[in-house]
Length: 300
Image (cartoon, rainbow, N blue to C red; front, side, top):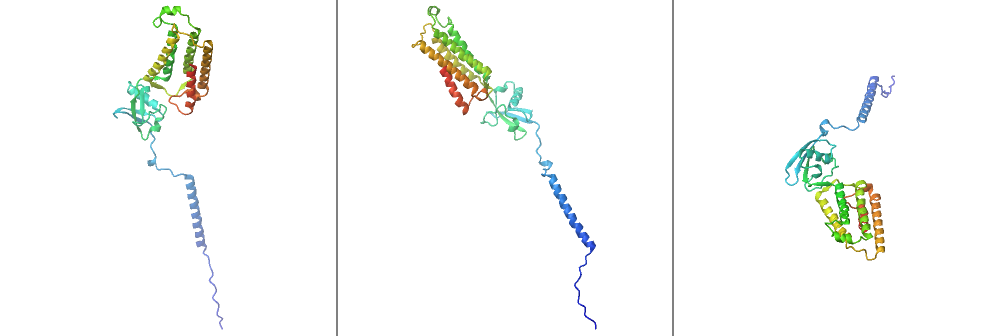
C-alpha cells in the first residue's frame, strides 16, 4: 500500500539576486539622504537671487528747495554717503556764494527742526535723491565773538568813566573833588569780573552751537554796555559819596564779591561736563547754571 505523504510546509527560498538588489537600494537611499543633509548644512541660509539685492548707492543727489515758495534753488550732486549736513552746506555755498554755510538752515520737512551740521546725510535718505528745505538764517556771528564783544565792552566803557573824560564830567569838579578809596575798589572789582569772563571764554568754555544771529549779539551788547554805562557814571561821578555804613559796609561787600566770583568760577569749571557752555539747556545743566548765574549777580 502506498502511504499517503503529508504535504510539507512550503520552504522559503531566497533569491540571492533579489536580496542583493534590495540591500543596494536601501543603501543608496541612505547615502542620498546623507548627501542632501550635508548639502543643506553646508549651504547655510539660502541666499536671495541677484535680482532681490539692493543696489549699493555710491552717491546721493540733494535737491534744495525754498521753504516758502517750494521752488528749486539748486541740486547738489555727487554727495558721498559719509558726508554730513555741513558738507552739503559747503557744496551749496559753492553753487550759491551769497549764502555762506553758517547762514544756511536746512530742514527735512517744511515745519521741521533745523538739521544739525553733524548729522550723516545717509541717515536722511530713503532713495538716491534727498529733498531738503532751505531757510536764510540771516547774518551770523560765532559764539566766541559774541561773548568776547559782550564782555570787552563793559570793561573798556567803565575805564572811560573811571578816568573822568572831559566829554562826560566837568573838569573843574573833577580836579576839586578827591576820589574815595571805594571808587578805586569798585573799578578793580568790575575789571576783575569781566577779565575773568574773557579768560573763561577763551580757555575754559566750549560752546554747544557754532553761530548765532547778529541781532542777538546787538541785544546782548545793548544790555551789558548800557547797564555798565549807567552804574559807571554814578560811581565815578565827582560828587559821588561813599556808602552810609562806611568801611564795614565796603569790606563786607568786597568779601561777598570775591566769594561769589570764586564759587561761580569753581562751578563753571568743575561741575559742568567737559567744561561746556550749553545754549538752550535743560535738566541737570539748568540745576548747575541757574545757581551759578545767581552767584555772579551776587558777586557783582
